[in-house]
Length: 238
Image (cartoon, rainbow, N blue to C red; front, top):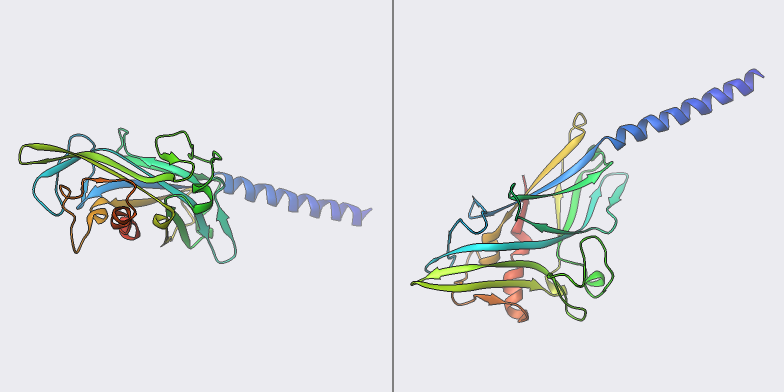
């Protein structure tokens, strides 16, 4: 009888411990906050003007959207892969930033975070709805072309002219994976990761693009590649 009681107590203690650990994990979360800048100046849609990177005039941005996808947290002993990990990040809100919340995650168990700009080739060629992917949305070109990974639209003011700016960047070749180290402390239930998007990187750093010369980029793969090469340095983690 004593052995049975001891076994029962041991099982009960183990079960209680598991429940407590799960409950503690359930209270934790990781928040990814994305903020956009142009030459270090916070992005303000519609109202703030910014200098043409490679020429005369100034421009405003009226709309900015991009896909962040395939978020993974990697640790020494385990890996978290977010299911249906396709997020349409946009900045047309009062806060001027966009947040993605990963619930029930203890950030101290992981040493790095991986994410991608764009949509992976498998999902890009599919009409299946997953996360924020919708083949009928404005961010979709067509089933055989795929999604716009980044949409940036605005107006360039130059010599009393108003030149529409339309940058729709897609194609599988533009899909870009990024990795960042994270160092979360154990006493924080809500880990906030601040990601900064420096949009000037899209228009060249060493050889800045004159928006008057390249004001529209859609289906031309060479022009798309010219903008998309900035994806590699577009995002940084504070």
